[in-house]
Each structure stands twice: as C-alpha cells, then as structure tokens.
Length: 481
Image 1: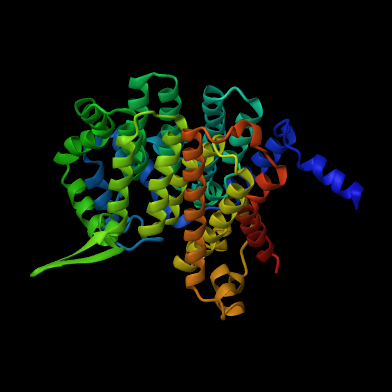
Image 2: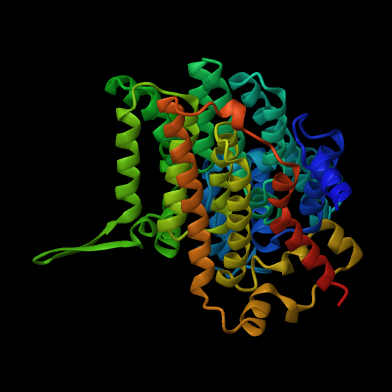
C-alpha cells in the first residue's frame, strides 16, 4: 500500500506543471470532439448561409444579405431540416456569416470555378478544423495572459491546459459546433491587451467579441466599470464596444429583410424576455410585472464593480464570473451560451488556492450541464450528435436511439426527481462563486499568501474532463450496441 500511495503521490504531484504528453492527450480529445460530433441541423444551416454570403459577396448583394436569405428560406432552400418559414432565416450578426464564409472561401471558389458540387462534408471538415485550431490558439492566448500576470511558469501551463480541456467548452462549442467560439476568442484577446495596457486594441477586440455575440457584453461591461470610474470615459468605452452592433444596425437598416428577421426571431425565441423569466411579482394597481432576479443581481454587481477603487486582476475575472453565474442561475439559457462562463472560470484558477475544490465543482457543473441539456433539448443535444460528425459519417456510425441519455435517465432512474439536476447544477455554480468571492476578499485583506498554499493536483485537473470524455465515450459505445 505504501508503494502504491507513493506512486500515486508522485503521479499526482504537479509542481513542475503538465507534461508535453498531457497536452498531446488534450489535443487528441479536442480532435475527437471536433471530428466525431456535430449538431448538424444548426451547423449545416449556418455554414450553408455562410456560403450564400459568399454568393452575395460575388454578386454585389452583401447589403441585401438578410433579404436574400429570407427569400431562400421561404422558398424552401433549407427545407431538408428546416420549415419554409423565417425560422430558417439568418439569426446572427453579419460578421459570423462573413467569418465562416471566409474560412470556406478557398474551397468555395474552387467549387464554383469548376462546378464540382463539393459535398457538404468537405465544408464541415474545414470549419470544424478551424474551430479546433481556434481552440488551440485560445489556449496559447490564455498562457500568454497568465505569463503577463504571474511569472510562475507552472501556473500558466496548468491554467492553459485547464482551458484546453474545459469540458463545458468541449461540449457546448466544439461538439455542438456553434459560433460562440469567435466571441470567446476576441474576448480573450481583449483581456490580453488590457493587461498589456493597449487600451485601443483592448476596445477593438471587445467590440469584435460583442459584434459576434452580444451576450458577451454581460461579462465585458462589468470589466469596463471596474477599470474606469470617470463617467464620460466609461460612456466612451461602452460606445466603442457597442460600435460594431450599432454599425450593423445602421448599414442593414436599409435592408428590409434584416428588420423582418430580427422581429421574427425576437418574437419566436424571446431573447429579452428570458431575462425576466425568473423573479418576483411587482404589482401596482393595474401595473403588473416581474422584477428580474438576474437584472437586479447584474446591477448590484456593476455597482460593486464601480465602488472598488483598488482594482486587482483577480476582480477582473471574478466579477464577470459572478455575472455569468447569475446568468446560469436565473436565465433560461441555451447550451451554446454556457461557454461564456469558461474564460472567467479558467482564469480565476490563477487566483484561488482552492484548486482541488474548484476542479470538483467544475466537474459537477459540467456533468449537469450535459445532463440538463439532454433532458431539456430532447433529440437535439444528446449523444445522437455523433451521427453528424465527419468521422462518424465516413464510417457510417449511428447510435442506438434507445440508449439516448434522456431515455436512460427517465427510464432507468425514474425515482430521481428531475429537479435534482438543475439544483445540483446551480449548487455547483454558487459553490464556485463562493470560492472565488472568499479568495478575492482574502487577497484584498492580505490574510493569505496564496502562492505558498496553492497546490496543483494532476488528478483534480484531469477529473474535470470526465463529463465531456464520458459523454464522447458513451456516444461511441452506443454505436456498437
């Protein structure tokens, strides 16, 4: 037993940082996630509309893009998986379609020049490879951020590995294959140049992050408030960050299809209404409304951020994490949006000495994100996503539908209340919020020398990956049962 314990302690000792083999294993997991899984319904629509953007580009119709897509949607151009309605319209900012179109541009040009009718599988492989490459590049950015903040090499290595193996990012972005990855990339670049003191590049990258996905503003705005206390300068920075969104509204104001799509999608999906889904009743005679827990929490956090005068980098990550934690707790989230938690959660590992506890809580959080997604989005974000992967299609793999996660959970474990999944997910989020809040307060009061008590444990770091790795392994297994 002593020899076993000694061997385990030697393996678990992470004082020197992760080895090259661990990075290789992480990249292998990333590649499996990228090329064996895909939620084809949304992904194919987005990529096809990005190819249509290229068509508009070469035919001088870029400024009528949304009207062109609406016509295609209503004519049944996307009817293989979508109805002949504006549900198949272009729901995202133009920069998303331009970016995916640019990724596909070399093959697109070759295809159009020689009329080859290139299979969609080729485009899927190209875009998925680009997503995997962006994930690796973001890992390098995270490493650079850590090196700028702290000279400790092992911390930078472990935090970057934690980002590369983030189970929520692997599941919500790489496996599902959604566009939020662009927004996270520019958010991290903005943080990097904020640390380097390049204010205008910081604002440029934050602007691009918000242009790709406006939800990222929930994390960016508290950072701006934390850093800048002069109201006029704060307004200037906020306008700069919002300028991409404002520019799109100005340019596409002249495209009737843009307003038509925005109105339809807002009424169908109720993006703003989601913020008021959880709250307390607020009645005044004939006036009847709901006070949003999230909006109240967000305002309180922003006020706290403004009141903090001695800004430390731990706050720059902890405060946006509190906002994103409140978002998970109080807003009817979509699986793709869970990636918004990851950058702040990962970078806070630089400033918490409760690394083992944080890893355990992240593991629980990730597990119940996957389970709740399987229960809340039946037949969509379950193990059947393996059917849409590049490798899976080439090998003609298909799951046993009777073994889908939601069916197993409801059939095999009928005595477990469904509410327990949401409760444990929220408990894990609150747990991480408490850990980060306590640790940042200790840093502020100088009650702890975290560098002396911080201890990285290899097993804790890799246990985090189990939810995503288990999901992938289980999906693959069902293809042979």
